[in-house]
Structures are given as structure tokens and as C-alpha cells.
Image (cartoon, rainbow, N blue to C red; front, side, top):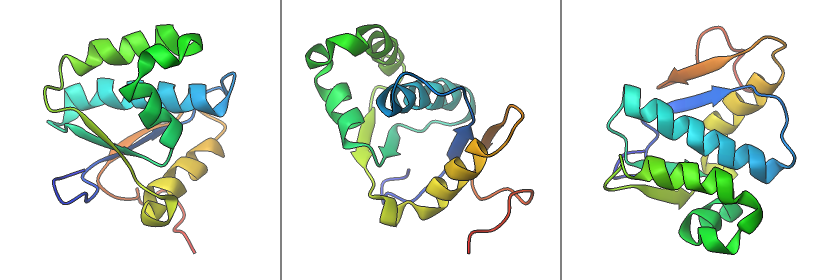
Length: 124
């Protein structure tokens, strides 16, 4: 997201379901951060998951996620101006649509782009 909180780059991939939705959220952030190191100078990330933001701000309070959060803390070294903000789903409809559509694919899917790819059906 840019300084005006406009989406600059969307990423999605379909992965095997994790132990919980929260584990999936943490994994998605880690993957996004790793890819931003290669594709963008992005420093700000958005999520509709308030728990994920709480985890990033106070990782010691989430001991069961210690390993996953250590990886994110390590990645934050490469993002000197790292920021993660809450974006309600109502304001994040395009990204939410891309994520939901990716889950329906039976093959491995990785997508990084600025808009909905032409090969995805358009939201109604």
C-alpha cells in the first residue's frame, strides 16, 4: 500500500490449510514479505486480520506462534519502515476476491500483481 493506503501490489497463493486460520494469516504475511524483498520497495502491509496485527506488535504474548513470529521479526530487519495496518474487508474487496478465488484452484497458484489478472473471473 502507498502512503494514501491505496493498493500498490497484491499477492496471493493457494497453500495447504494450516492448523488454524491464524496460522495461515501469519504464513501469508511471511510469504508477502519475502516476495516484497524481490519485487518492490513496499514497507506497508495491509490485512483484515486484527489478531495478526496484535501478534506482530506483541509477539511474546503469542507463544504458540513463536517460531513463525521469529521468522517475521527476522524479515522486518529488511523493512526499516515496516508498517502493518488493518484494512476492513469492505475496503479490501478486490484483494479478498483474489484470495478467495485462489483457494478454488486445484493446482499450485502464486500471483503477484497490481490488478486482478485477466485469467480470473471478474467479481460480480
